[in-house]
Length: 322
Image (cartoon, rainbow, N blue to C red; front, side, top):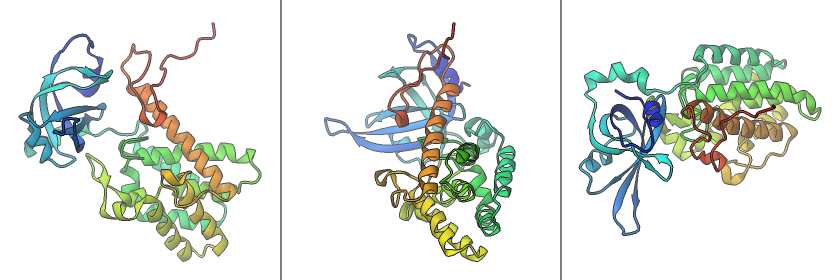
């Protein structure tokens, strides 16, 4: 039984037979230029993902078409590449029997390289750094209410930190960067900036659902994580007795952290702390893409595959100072 990472390490010039167990991450119906329908299917395990184009005349087209995200398959086929991306030819696909699912869960779920308990412990240490009690109580209450989901959900569905506990990893890394950078900008209130960093994506704990394949919940589709996070912080802030001014500013950080309206921000950043958090968010999101490319690309390759969020591949070789 092969992993996705092992398949990508096989010689590209050969079509090698394989068998693996993968989870259906995403599936979308599209139309070709001749107006025929095909499925764009994303399959993967904890070591990586690949895309498969399934045409209407394929024997397994109905199987993928009628399967929900999170369905587990055993597939056989041959390795292949299309436009320099791993895109195997699938000869056979079948749903895994429910009795077999348990033994493959650890194989299928990609997790943060940092243990979940370590991330949560460090996050609580950052909460404790907040000197203003109502602000600290607001942040602590938001995390406590959504702890179970916040610990496990990814940072995004596909762009960055898109794996189990990815949001918590992203948040902790942002906290580290924020604490280190805030002293360089005296205009930025460090307490408010740190609180905004911790809560900037708290709405994703409501927006996302699913253990094996992440998708948007009903509220996620109707409201989105920016609005859901704003509402979560507002309820907690009022209960904690946060002043109206601080609450307005904390909410503004959450509403504007996406940076641009076309990226999903409800408004443009208009306070020093909101600008700061938005930039730290963008920095860690982009570097998260780089880190993922570095640790998942097979050894020996000079460049990673195309990284959508960066607009191209990543050079993997370290610089030489000889």
